[in-house]
Length: 510
Image (cartoon, helix red, strand yellow):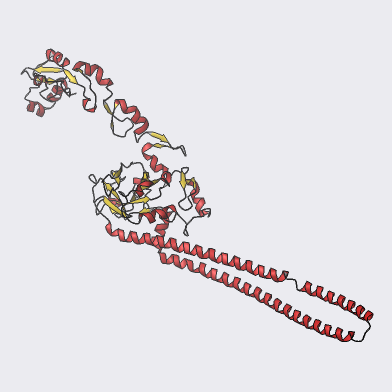
């Protein structure tokens, strides 16, 4: 062990005489050779074991040495500062007391984290670091009780089957494991026309093209037209029957009226020249006959069937109208959603020209208000940056943001994530990806940027070589509160900027 690397408290005139001729630190277990040179005992033993070092120091390995007792005592009495004074320790005292007593218990003494994160932690803060801060400490997921490293917890939340997750379409909250049945069994009332999560739908639209989706609407519209024609035919048939019934009834009423008129004339002719008693009897008989006919006509003239016919027609027409309006509304909504997706694809196509190749990317996001509204309504909950690279032959990456939050940040925070994408040069690159990543929301006025930096965990699946188009992203579900989108320093003229910076200093590009 070389000499004491301690700072003298104050000035000491003889300090040079107390320094080792080899390591030039304060002598530890001081010895002296025949030429009067002083060495630490361990430094002397190291020097004589190497002929080149012995020659450089000008010593003879065979010469006699002896312990320098006087110098050892002088060194023990030196007033020194604690070796951890730069970390905040204010202890001062004799070097002997420092080595035998204080050094072992100094709360400012740093030691490498025993859990393996690599950080040097002051002894007094080690317990807190092990319990609350170290990314290598063991934690349990409160949702599924799985044990994992704390550094992997945020990634775990993005895939935990029992973690609460809000459906991006209807906003119903449920365990993530129930999401597939929620969407596949059509339990989701807000689901998009194509099944799948929003990233899958965007990818689906990008590859299958919007034109195909309009072609898909053709059979549905044709079916609707056929149904409408059938319903209209039924209505026309019912209307014709009602019209015919009304016409027959009208003819019967005219005939009966004419018949009554003729009968009245006959009665008048018949009554001429008859006695009054006979006239009264005849009139009573005629009145009775007329009452019977009137009752019969009233019965036949009942408007119930006619009213019922009109009511049925009105009900059928109302139902048909409601059905048509509902189906038209569905078509308008579907068309509107396709327009939104088409707009996003056009934006990505235009922005793809802005790809960078130095590990740094500034993402300009226009129309923030509309995009936030789309996220709240479940139309487009996430948006993606164009891909960018650490070099021409480097890692392929992208940023994506949830303007109404995602997971534990849903409806409360802006969520921003970093994702590795499948690249052409992946076979030649080092895996897992372990380079520091910074995500920044740019303050356009005062430069008080919001910065979040993380060091990728080598055990996380997010940073292994991608097997599909994109790995599960890693980042911050609670990057910033949603109110930040109303702050004119960060969203100016309906435009915001998000920047990603990857530390490329250690990256070797093929």
